[in-house]
Image (cartoon, rainbow, N blue to C red; front, side, top):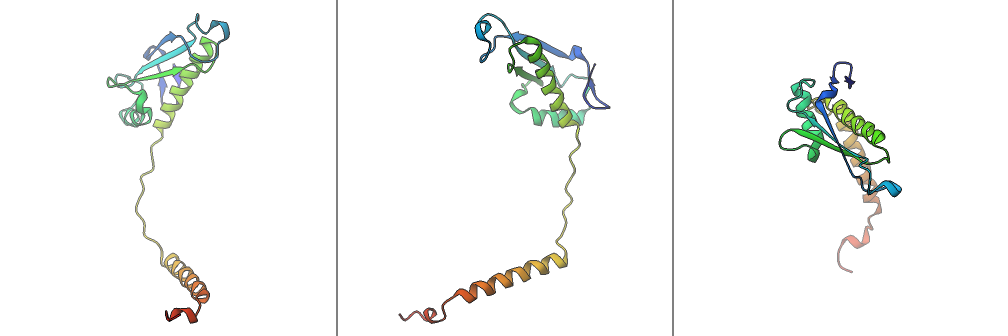
Length: 143
């Protein structure tokens, strides 16, 4: 089991890994060794996640989510399979952690009387400053 939050943990059998050739760093091995990891997690059929978390996770996953509800994460940052594997799992866990946080719903509020008055006082003061800059003679229009 992979711990995600105190209440959520993933069963390792729900993760499917396949190793592919990576682009980028790898030296002489880059064309011979499959070091990149493609991690697949079937989110829709997962028993580890509550429905609300699944909905938020689908939004967070974005284009990494297939039409079948499978999240695909490709990790090829490192030169070794093991480190790429750890990176892919860490990224998935971080994504699920983010989805586990329930967003705070915004309650519409109204500005207080004091804040309205302060705003209007500021506007009046600014207006006075600008009015003082105007040239009294050129306001007539007959130059």
